[in-house]
Amino acid sequence: MENSVDHIDELIGKYLSGETSAQESAAVEQWIAHSESNRRYFDQFKVIFERAATVKTLPQFDTDAAWSRMKSRLNSAPRGKVVLMKPFWENVYLRVAASVIIVLGIGLFLYRQFDSAPAAVQMVAETKIEKDTLPDGSAVTLNKKTELAYSYNKKEKAHRVKLKGEAYFDIRHKDDKTFIVEADQVLIKDIGTSFNVKAYPETNRIEVVVEQGEVQLYTATNEGIFVRAGGKGVYDKLTKTFSLDQPEPNAAAYKSRHFVFSDEQLGAMIVTLNNVYDRKIKIAPHLATCRLTVTFSDESPEEIANVIAETLGLSVTADGPDLLLEGKACEN
Image 1 (cartoon, rainbow, N blue to C red):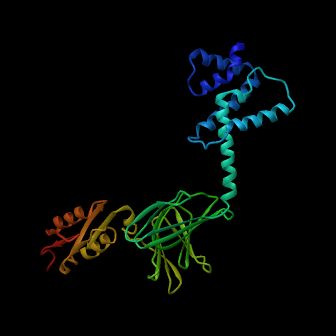
Image 2 (cartoon, rainbow, N blue to C red; image 1 turned 60 degrees about the vertical axis):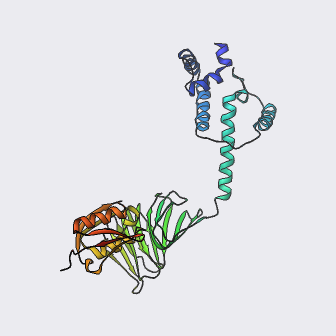
Image 3 (cartoon, rainbow, N blue to C red; image 1 turned 120 degrees about the vertical axis):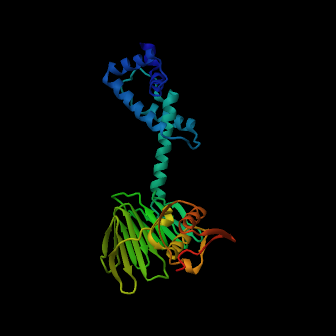
């Protein structure tokens, strides 16, 4: 068994990585059960081994020099009773694992030093809908003609977004951190998960549709209102008042490309669709009042135009880069 003790570090390393034979596994387990000090040693080894396994890449450090310095300090320190096993710095498994812990410690130190400054990110969507992820892990979809500025203040534990335009937020919610969207005069505080904010500077309304969870709409001088899932909150810039309303079925269709039209006029349908897709659908003026009940789920403009044409008895032709719907439907 003495030979097993001399090589117990290698055996433990193989044991934790699943490389031991049945006989070797039995030897390790017998050694662990032999004494409480052996068990504590194994537990410490296991913690280091598991932490090392979580790191995929390591920066390049002069570990030999580090070990030389450490050995020098250890040799000069008072000694207690020696356990019959090799010093852990002479073992390959533990040297790699301890190197990992040194790297993690350095990384944590640098994080604490430099993360005190707010992280700032700028996002812009001009002519196309853009999807991205904020530094806190929250997902965001920007509609066309939208600008977003994100910052995080570590001291205040506050994520803050300044928005001009329209964006859908899927918040990575944390109870100990605050997430606020600032849109013109209004502040929108996340208390839930997913919501859409429509706040174009040229309009007199700021609209928030909550898909999941809850948000609070307020200003610096008005505590505002709470909007829950399935609801819509509106702020009137002229009267400086808040109100609750029913959300439109396609409020966030630019994100999901899921459209629901119920007895909708074709003219209004085309406007909604053209706000999302780059390839536009055109219709003759007399077709604008045709009514249609239909659902689209991530279909292309060509597929949508063909469904409308088939339903109303129209034809579809190319009009440059766009699509043209023509026919005699609804003329009377």
